Amino acid sequence: MIDRTGQPFIRIRGLHKKLGWQEVLRGIDLDVWRGETLCIIGPSGEGKTVTMKHVIGLMQPDSGTVEVDGIQVNGLRERELAPVRQRVSMLFQNAALFDRLTVEQNVAFPLREAGVTDKKEIKDRVAAALDVVGLGQHGQKLPVNLSGGMRKRAGIARAIVGRAQCILYDEPTSSLDPVVSDVIDTVILRLQERHGITSLVVTHDMKSLFKIADRIAMLKNGLIHFLGTKEELRACPDKIVQDFINGRADVDF
Amino acid sequence: MLAFQSFEALPELSIAPAAQTSPLAISQTTVSFLVATQHAALTLGRFRIALSTKCRANPSTRQVTKPLFAFRPGPAIMRGVTDVVRIPGRVFLHFISYMGQIAFLVRDLMTAFSNRVWRIGLIAEQIVSIGYGSQAVVIVTGAFTGAVFTFQTYAKFKDFGVESSVGAIVSVALCRELGPVLAGLMVGGRVGASMAADIGTMKVTEQVDALRVMGVHPVDYLVLPRFIAMMFSMPILVAESITFGLMASYAVAVFGYGVPHAWFVHHMVDHTNQWDIVIGMIKGFAFGIIITLVACHQGLRAENGAVGVGIGTTRAVVISSLVMLIANFFLSILLNYIWPLGNNV
Image (spheres, rainbow over the protein chains, first blue to last red):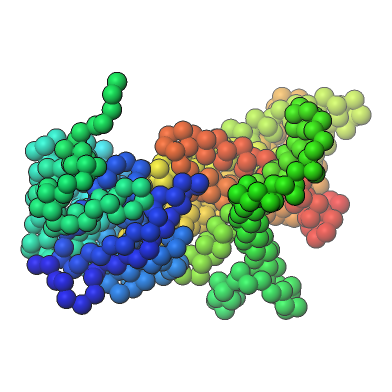
């Protein structure tokens, strides 16, 4: 259930970021409401992942502000970001599981680091998280022995085990077959419906986009080019938007 | 604890008279100076970029500067002239930048120490990897160095009729120089490369970012256990290197050349005191710090995929080896002349 009362869960204002000489973000304003799934789309290199990394403090903006649940993220030092990172978790493009740990150990990692010492509690919470993503039988495997889809699902389990209120997904269905992509989409939807998790999803997968998104933001030239619902996106007369969502290239070989 | 807290409050650098009294305060001041220098270098860099952009954009500036460059001696000469300034300048800026990054790493490491979150399992794992895993390399290196050194020294000593003193010279050399330096170089090659590759791979596969997202500082999790394990392992490895070097030396001298056992041992014991061993341990300790800092720094700044990891690994070995050799020179001066330990001066 999307809660549009009060402050947005994520509030971005005037976000500017330069990487080297390239101005990747040129003044982004974006709100993500509690319980909402907002998808960010756009051509490669337009700053989708960069925007997401600002939300969780992996990058600091050149100017502008980023607030998460009322906490201003920009300007905080690495060790001061703990309150934000208790609320927000992230699924990386390649899941970023620790190679030397089994799936269970990977999922238990945030709990142990958060100071949970009760072994039974850790075991129960890990089992519950793995069940949500359908990996209950694969807890003893090492990441190297998992398929791409299973790795992403293990990454989601690790993201939700700490009871984060918001999950950032960086291309959760990239390089997955359509069936596995659908499984991932279902997991994202289930987390939103059953646990009220707020989601910020960067994706290039249009099928996935239309399945999971409540709202969509399209980035182009470092700015928000389009912001609206699925229906508004489909009906948008803008050529760039239509070319992008229909996968049309305007090239002449 | 108080010192760590006040240290964290830097980099507003202030050198109080009391800060120069204790070694910790001196190290804090040094690190703070490097942090401040790094800030200055960054600010200078930004100013230079801003100035050059402004000058390019402003036609009046271009007109003002034009007469200064009216004489053009030719591109090759100009390049040669500007290179005289530019290349040393670039090297100097790179050096300052590098030292600044190392200073930040040291600051984070000290904060990690002061947080007192000891991951015993990880430390034990690293001790096994660094200490236990490097033993064969260090023992073989020490043994054959001792053997060859004895072999060469004996030939020359025999010309002077003092071949029975071979144990003394080999012992002192192994304890003070050869043992720690060669053990350091071997461990730097083996462990330094492994550390840089491990952390670098984690960096380029976003595992380091994943740690940060879970609220774990990468220095706390990746660097601190390696640092502690290295502190623990390196002196022991140096001791092993020296011991096996001496055993090999004994074998070559006594069994190979027939030097009497009693003379070899007498000269060795007579000319080697506990400070020679302590100096070796101190050097091993220092080399451990160098290897860990350089290797972890290269790993944490790795980028651009496998190529970046490869470059970082190579740099880790090369830089740590060079820094160890340079540091060995200054440590030798320090421990022989400034704070002389033992009676070998």
